[in-house]
Image (cartoon, rainbow, N blue to C red; front, side, top):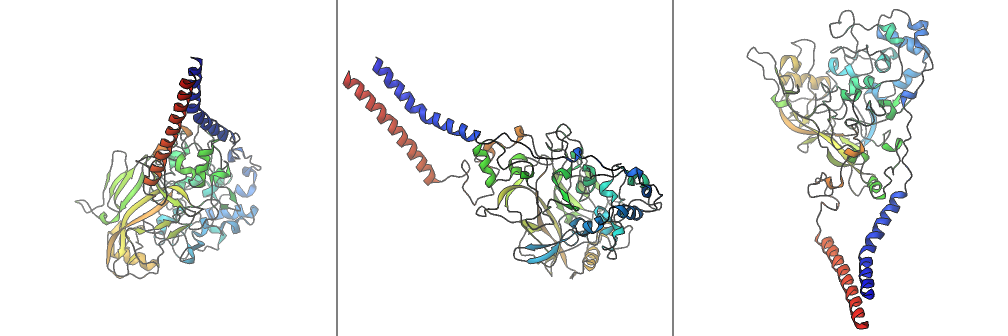
Length: 530
């Protein structure tokens, strides 16, 4: 009986030993990492070294924001040269695009599939420029008085640029119930490091409303829970934008790939976290080919909806009184606007996933249409590229005007202060809007137009979820995989390979046969000895 007990014990050991070895191996691998430490210095820890209210030069009755800038630069010498060399000021930068060579691109001259382009719609779009009064081509980029210091450094939350004034705040002639003339001495004496709302006044509301463009940048981040964003939450570290977007000589680190192309001056999670933060070898190895954002931002537009589709071809319809009208959904989002057309919005959106190596292509004003949908921008990357990672992306789709003769996308003139100047938002004349928009941008227009489908790609970086809300393994490693469109590599759990399946099954049968043979040998030996 004792021999039979020993045989059963040996059998159990032979079955359980491989499992035990596997568990020990995983445990040892998980212990290789050190406890995760975050290397971050927050702007909230910054101690202001001066009291601007004590400076006599800031106690005068300023007549305009230009005079405030002069006062700022009288002490902060050389800061104007730093600012005027940045993309925030120039709205373009020299870049090299694969296949196109060196070009100068930016919001100043690129086409988009929101309002088609900023240039020519200065009164409205240049409200988000860090300058004062970029109303037309006469704007002097070399005049340092045109820098708006207050829009980034105001700490009072009372300084705003007025709608339709090309980046100017309200004046005595333009003030209304919404925008009052700023109290310049009060604002100038209360300046400091940029806060979330200084950045958000442009980056949250670009495209005509809150969260329209990015999907992961909106006013909810000013005061949110960890569910919305673990970094910017009031019950977390309550980080400001500049805590990640580190700034040196007014050059703000970070890239927006709707207007950028090169893999330089980027932010990555390793600024504060290591490349092995999980204390789990298997999970940390994913970092080689998977961006942190892909697992840690399972959905975006968590608080308010974002615009996913914009159909310009339906714009221009008027009501029975020949006036423009709007239709809203239950949440107040515009389903239709006469001035812009139909939209599709959504919340808690699952990203689409693409290979991305930090470089991108752009549809330039000199380009002709060769594919449909037209790629407004295109993220470069593939599995075999060692610098590429799987990245979560918002894809904004639309339908916009194009020249059917020249086969080019059209810059529309959309904005003007009054009717009769050919702006579509006032006169609803497609042809005149196209003619004037193309003329301002010094591009040819044939007079023949139609509408075409377009796509724009916006990598997702914000609205990072707490760890218990990150992606589970099966959301990618399964038949219903989030990565179904990435077909240039083998993904266990999603992909099926007969050769690999047969090999695995064969190994299982061999292991089972070995166990049976071992058991049979033990039994034969037992009964033979008995």
